[in-house]
Length: 121
Image (cartoon, rainbow, N blue to C red; front, side, top):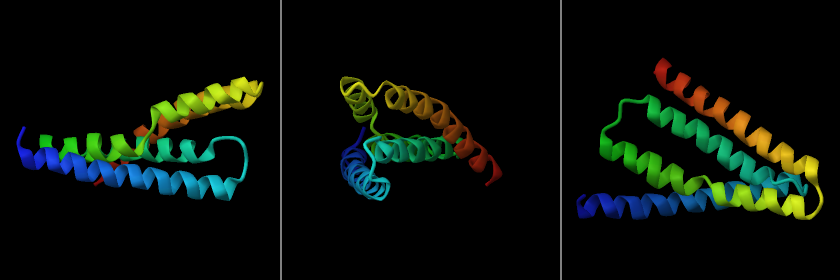
């Protein structure tokens, strides 16, 4: 890999992580509930975006920058797992199960939607 590509991953990944922070906080404030709606919104929109990116005919470098750097930094598996675990610690089993089920089912649907949108372009 060349230096420009690494620099692109660094910079674009930074944008993705800032976008995650902004979206998570905005949705969390709007929902104002103990359920992690912000993380759910980030991961579902990220799944749709990644589906879109994979459905487009991008070069290897462009796919790396968009998929790995931007969307990879935007989405957050570890936060999803930690928030689910915290719900179980708080003895909130139904919200924990809902977080797992909704994230997986809606995440797959969002990725499929993104790929479908890409196929229409």
